[in-house]
Image (cartoon, protein in one colour):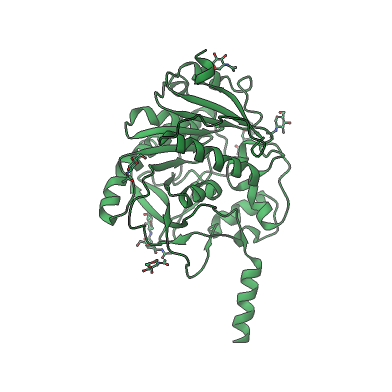
Length: 365
Ligand SMILES: *[C@@H]1O[C@H](CO)[C@@H](O)[C@H](O)[C@H]1NC(C)=O
Ligand SMILES: *[C@@H]1O[C@H](CO)[C@@H](O)[C@H](O)[C@H]1NC(C)=O
Ligand SMILES: *[C@@H]1O[C@H](CO)[C@@H](O)[C@H](O)[C@H]1NC(C)=O
Ligand SMILES: *[C@@H]1O[C@H](CO)[C@@H](O)[C@H](O)[C@H]1NC(C)=O
Ligand SMILES: *[C@@H]1O[C@H](CO)[C@@H](O)[C@H](O)[C@H]1NC(C)=O
Ligand SMILES: *[C@@H]1O[C@H](CO)[C@@H](O)[C@H](O)[C@H]1NC(C)=O
Ligand SMILES: *[C@@H]1O[C@H](CO)[C@@H](O)[C@H](O)[C@H]1NC(C)=O
């Protein structure tokens, strides 16, 4: 008895929670395998299945134990890379409720498809995605097995992927970009049958698409070919593929960039903007770095080690950047669903790092 109590104390004292969602719902979580063949898959993955992580609103309030953020294999890979004391990353927990009950009725929001940065797992966006779910959105975050350094399947087996220091050469990047667009399409066509089978209150007629880095570029490339997709968000992704640069999305596109992602540094954004006939807006988050848009920048903070100081992480930090991304991605989605103003209607002291750079309203003048 005494021993048990001590064990419990030790395990909870060591746990560290990431930035929790702040919406009115708690967040349910589950994973599914989507059958989908990738021709010419450049990764060591099986090439015939995708792993989907589903975040959704729930009224359940407690689960038996907190869901760990990391699987042990991924933690063992990332821990030394970030020069953290052994075992640190295993202590990160989430407030997710595994397999929690669905709501009784739809919340009325579109379903969000999500594609991560190259080499990252789709679960590395908890800060942003769980928050959207707590505000009533259902999120389908898609992993391409074999691309992230490790991926744990629901049955506990693992796929070891590309090395964490793999070179994303132009030819590898092209292949990744191509299958990311196809992966989004596979998830979109798989989802309605899943919703019917589970009787879930999820939206199968209207979708939004969101991605970081190459996932942001893939989102923008994917959107115009799918009438059910109402809008796309690209978080700081360069358009490495010519077909994306010349894509006229023809529906709202929201671009959020880190401070160094100027059109001088990445001319693909300027060229893309010139090809748009629909609504678009481009904002920059002063002081943010490219990797502040995923959870990585928050891992050390949550564990009490202080922020990263290196390129790709900005002085504003991951927690603040995630709060800003929550605010503006949320505002954009709200606007797409019927709000009557652009994303940054007026400058805000509270959100002063977010700066309007350009948009269809200026480009039209
Ligand atoms: C959630 O449900 C799935 C499918 O029914 C099952 O395979 C999985 O073990 C469950 N997960 C947990 C944590 O209960
Ligand atoms: C969620 O709530 C439902 C209904 O109250 C209950 O039957 C179910 O066991 C709960 N599930 C979890 C994971 O807490
Ligand atoms: C799907 O989203 C659209 C647009 O927001 C909404 O009008 C519709 O009611 C939603 N449907 C469901 C089942 O949630
Ligand atoms: C576990 O699931 C993966 C993905 O579907 C599959 O490839 C693998 O064969 C399964 N392993 C076992 C032991 O069932
Ligand atoms: C990636 O490319 C750089 C420069 O060409 C080279 O120095 C490095 O060793 C390569 N890394 C790997 C893992 O191949
Ligand atoms: C905004 O973008 C348009 C289209 O790319 C470009 O022609 C215009 O110069 C840009 N304006 C500003 C203020 O950056
Ligand atoms: C921005 O670019 C400069 C010059 O290359 C670099 O020193 C700095 O670390 C970068 N900052 C971020 C946040 O990426």
